[in-house]
Length: 141
Image (cartoon, rainbow, N blue to C red; front, side, top):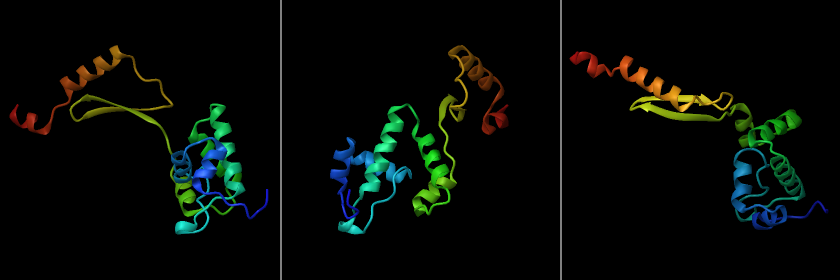
């Protein structure tokens, strides 16, 4: 491909078989470099298409986006990253599930752990109800 090939976001998305929204999201998450140029002159080049196809292929193989981003940082760690990519690289991401046990009391569980069974959650909620009191309730007791 010639190096002067330019794609608008619609064309890039069509070539890769994704939506424009996906392209924007991948740029936001640091998985795809930001477009070149400014304003109405913003465009993508063949390196963007290549990377977009790589991300899509890795995702289709079952690799989570967080791992794809880490792979990019590992491969290009010494390369110059955009400010957004540097920010994404500096902040580790993880996935959590949140469950409100009582009003004002929640359980947050990392995706690295199996979520407790419903029976265990009921027991935990009951323990919290018995042992955790709001400050205003303590004042009235």
